[in-house]
Image (cartoon, rainbow, N blue to C red; front, side, top):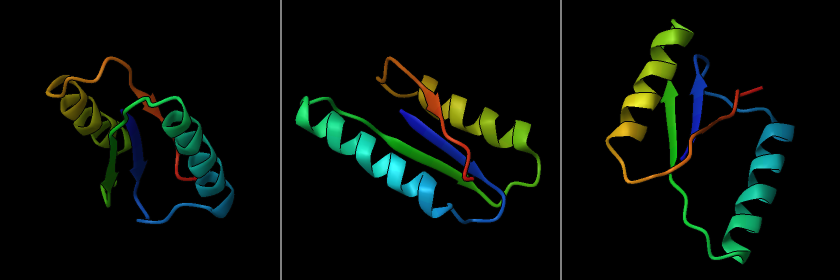
Length: 69
């Protein structure tokens, strides 16, 4: 699972470019992924907690956080 917390509801272009490159590599290897964003939360710790809860409720085996910048 890839989790992106973002208060501003935006992602910088270099971040998006990197994410798309990595998703392309996952696809080429036939690896599955889930992408979960937690946007608009003013408390980063609560945003990350929401992402972790979603991860724990999923069947994903790994969690990577990517900041929006």
